[in-house]
Length: 143
Length: 160
Image (cartoon, rainbow over all chains, first blue to last red; front, top):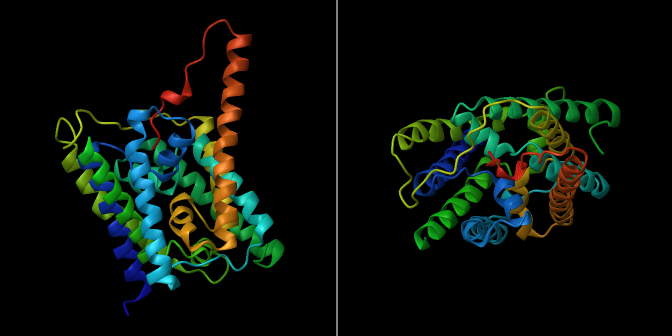
């Protein structure tokens, strides 16, 4: 078995390759919140097909992983369902308000040297570090 | 256009596989990466490093073309300014990411595993996106009612 940091590096390379493929073939940003949010926001029918295909394949591979490599899919043991409701609402609202998430701003935006994406990535990384630190010190890491 | 459907599916599938190989579909590992004052697990820094190492050079290489391979034009964000909305949205997202250990891609990739945790998170995430839609429309309606000039539609912004 490969060391876990190397798997992370390889997985990151696959993610970067997936983003490069979408850019090269259709000139689009592989930002998950933007692709999904565009569907929810009622993108015109000419702009829906590729979104459905991208997300459908993501779910399809997710189903294969759940069947063939279940240990790759975890659950947050230290988080309760009410916490996950709050977390989901914030992630959904925040990624739409800030026009992107870890993929769109992080992977794609930093690769394009976009100042907007650099500011967004710095902000969400900082907020996430502070949040986990607060959960660590105030609640003993479980919430 | 059929080709772009196929390549979008290939990209989405490869993206999901990459997330799983990288460990991003394990929320406890994500939280461990964010837990710098606890038992910090630095592995996930290598995800971003690997992704950018592949994507950045390819981006600048591909962008030397006048158009992508299958479509007549680029659909890329053109804004470069940093505004309050970007920072506030990023901060809300970061708090949610730290609370749940899921960001949007890993949540969708993990959804077919059908754990209570991922179903709960993903439904709430979709509700949060829909809520933003409602909030934005109300704000736009109020602005155009109070000001005589129509406000610029934020829906014209291409997402990062």
